[in-house]
Length: 276
Ligand SMILES: NC(=O)c1ccc[n+]([C@@H]2O[C@H](COP(=O)([O-])OP(=O)(O)OC[C@H]3O[C@@H](n4cnc5c(N)ncnc54)[C@H](O)[C@@H]3O)[C@@H](O)[C@H]2O)c1
Image (cartoon, rainbow, N blue to C red; front, top):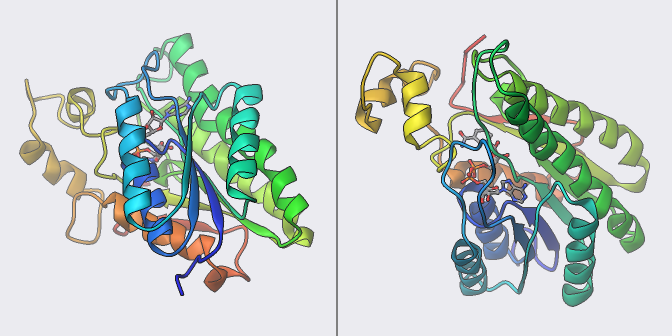
């Protein structure tokens, strides 16, 4: 028996990176997956866009792991479309038990310089989009009558501050506030709500020229080998980053009944990140 056997999980931002890792890890442990992603460009994002092929690859990997899968393309900023896609997925797979609000993006700038559009996009996706996800999912969890587990992807930036990242830090702190409020409201229905708070994760979100430059403004074309020691400087454990699979294992624990008496937790996966 898998650790989440028979459960159905909804994951946003599932085309690649951490979202894909969560989908595959949960499927390996017996879950069926509703996977959604925007699969396209986002204005002001520093990462390259995910593609429909990326989401199809996630679906292939879920099926290979033994899970059933329902995918849809959509934007977490569009509540009506998100709800319609989720409703369809729940009808196709037969219920909902686990929700992973993972979709997110980032861009940067000093607090007095960051463009208004960048601020608004980050808040719309990384905070309001997560609320949309919770809002669309809770009626299904309540209707199932078996409780459920909601896991929201915050960040170490949801617990402490980083220069050049004010909208990201504000949104990820906001996700922690949303999680805590939802945990208070939903506890009586046995619906648990927790966050994962990763440090640097090995995905396209940080593995790009713009982010490398932020860590190494003194270098012209910094490479990973050059910036890795600076990432390492944030960590107690001897690793400059964490892997998507490390975060997926934390998500699996929070999704499974092993954490059935845990709610309102901020679960760090951060190599002992000790930035202020
Ligand atoms: N990589 C890191 O260092 C790190 C650290 C802490 C937290 N996080 C958070 O982890 C989450 C996953 O990021 P990742 O590291 O896997 O990066 P990623 O860029 O590989 O994956 C993010 C996914 O979210 C999707 N997405 C973005 N905006 C969307 C929208 N409006 N609607 C639907 N899908 C959308 C993207 O298309 C992409 O597939 C994000 O919330 C991110 O902020 C990342």
